[in-house]
Amino acid sequence: MVTSKIPHATAKRLPIYYRYLHFLADAGKKRVSSTELADAVKVDSATIRRDFSYFGALGKRGYGYDVENLLAFFKKTLNQDQLTNVALIGVGNLGHALLNYNFHQSNNVRISAAFDINQDITGTIQSSVPVYDMSDMKEQLTVQQIEIVILTVPSTVAQAVTDELVAVGIKGILNFTPLRITVPSTVRVQNVDLTNELQTLIYFLNKFGVEDEQT
Ligand code: ATP
Image (tube, rainbow, N blue to C red):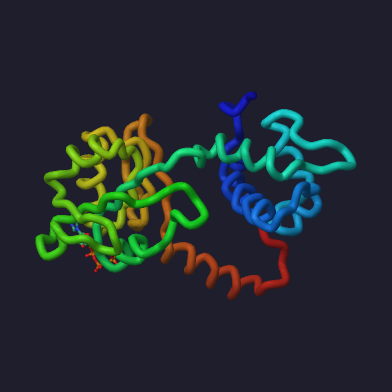
């Protein structure tokens, strides 16, 4: 099974497929066609067939895809058969919201530790997650085998905190700060800039309305 050469765009769609397949399996559905999938996840069926082709012949003509097989396959590919612990750095407003968000409900991911410098909050448990001081970060990340963090610190300290994270061996950062952080090539960053997304939406709505083709 060749999974190392999956295009980035395909990889980004895998969680979408996974979530919907989970829904189908829960509803007791045994098979699904690429057209049905396309309607549900809003990705055209040719793209779906191409995406799936990267994993070998998973579908049969006239039969569609076996939901259980496909689900088991995606579970493995997305590491969903094992629980992934992630940490959150910066328990401010956004950090709190993410601590409250139930990642675990549909995905095998949970925030198992949070870190902050504010002594009013360190040493407490927020939304069932312990908040440690930054000085305990290296130890906790090692003990809990955490390689991924969610970054919700103020942008003024985002790079300094990133440097600390890199120094303790973090492999992936989900960056919610507006700052484009600099990391070595051994670390992967996903940016989630909510303000930027909202501004882009407003811009497109003002300029083009809702009729035009969306890309
Ligand atoms: P936001 O909505 O962006 O979270 P906020 O006003 O609640 O905003 P910020 O000032 O953005 O809070 O700070 C977010 C959190 O990051 C705070 O809890 C703050 O104590 C924490 N923080 C600030 N500096 C650092 C740092 N160097 N390391 C870790 N946490 C930090």
